[in-house]
Amino acid sequence: MKRRQYFNKNKEVAYVTQTTLSIDDTSNIIKVIKDKYKNVIEPSRGDICYATTNRQNAVKDLTLKCDIIFVVGSENSSNSNRLKEISTRAGCEAILIDEFSDLDLEKIRNVNKIAITAGASAPEDRVQEIALALRDFTGGVINEIGKDEENIVFKMPPELRKERVK
Image (tube, rainbow, N blue to C red):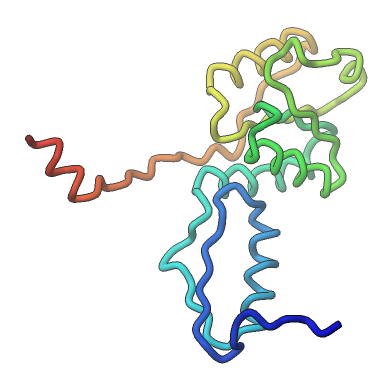
């Protein structure tokens, strides 16, 4: 059966990406598009959200420094699931949790280094609550590493600015 050609390889083709995709997966997809099509129009700037990018890069580093990673976030959070997948692919066990009571404490009795990360939508106070509870349970020390300031400000579109003035 012959494969159907949807786009002419020599015409302009554009792409956009979903913000919660893994950065590595997105890069691979973009490479395939660029290899196949000659005239690819790219977004003017990265369209993967900065919080997603920061967290995914941090998890890659954490997998080299710890025995287990707890990802704070809900099961229906695509962003949190990507963090868990990235850790698992790197060979570090990752467990998705919503709150401290979700933890099987027996699982961490003999663990030396625990990392905590969170999906972009996880409340910071929940992350801190879990970190403090783990510290109290293990008698360990909390070291906050790789904290990127997420202070990007987006300009309000002109149409909305006019509405606000009224």
